[in-house]
Every structure is written in structure tokens, then in C-alpha cells.
Length: 182
Image (tube, rainbow, N blue to C red; front, side, top):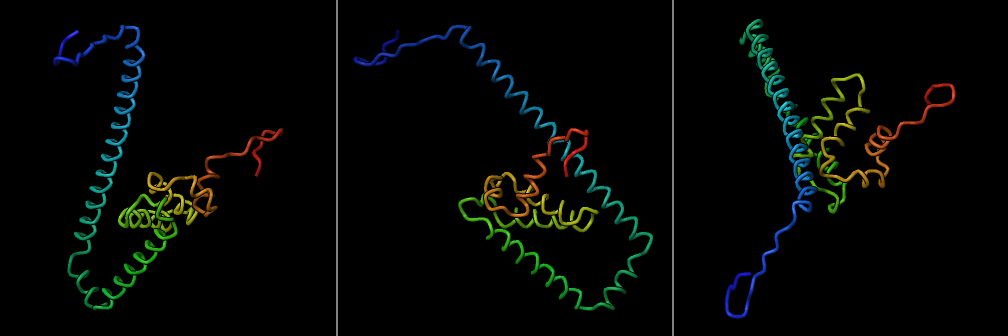
């Protein structure tokens, strides 16, 4: 016991080693989980970097094969209408992102405009570039925003994205013949 002032004392209690063992094991488990998540994130970042570099290399290859002049000739034929079309497409994406954001009440909206915009663009890319179409595209939007919007909200609202996510989580039980129910 040490005296801090005239009337105040501080008592030091040292825990037993048996009390610390479960805490140390739990702390070790948390550190292992974080290390595993860190490795997974790094591998995703490396994969994205490789895909980006592959895309840039492919673009450079195509431009070298075709040449720069045909690209500028095509742009000259299109004229400023090309930029007008780009503006209309951009406005469409912005308005649809705003609509997607306002569909989620403010108390459940844990994302900002850019997060919603990137989730929307990612979902659109999946919709147009895969054979699954809107089914996987809408689920991609939900997956990209899953940390910002609770899944319970999507279930309660019975929106198509929530229905897709719930259907993916609850698989039907096999029947007696060994086939799955449809």
C-alpha cells in the first residue's frame, strides 16, 4: 500500500496467473483473427492491383496496334455530341444514386454519396458484363454496402436486394429423394 496524499491511499491488487490465462488466450485469438483479415485484405489489394495493371497493359497494347490517329479521327466524326452523351449518362448515374440513397431512411443510411455511387457502378458493371444480369448486379450493390446498411432493414422492407440476400443465405433442405426443393 502506498500513500498518495494525507487522506488518499491507493491499493495495488495483483491478479493471479490463473485469472490472466483466459484473457491472454482471448487476446491471442483476437490478434490471430486480425492477422488473418489483414492477409486477406492484402491479397485482395494485390489482386486488384494486378487486374488494374493488366487492364492498363491491354489498353496500351490496343492503342499501339490501332494507333492514336484513328481514335482522334473517330472522336472528330462524333464531335461534341460525344461529350453531351457522356454528360447525360453521368447525370443518369447521379440521379439513380440519389434515388438509391433516398430509398434508405436516414437512420439506416451509414454511407455517403460516393460510396453509393461506387456501389452502383460496381453493380451495373456486374449486370452488364456477366450472364447473371440484374440478379447478381443487385446483390453486388447490397454486398458493397453491407457494412453501411443493416441486412435486417433490407429484410423488413422486403426489397429485391434483401430478398436476394436472404435467399442466398437460406438454402432449402434436401427432399427424401436426395433432390433439392425448387
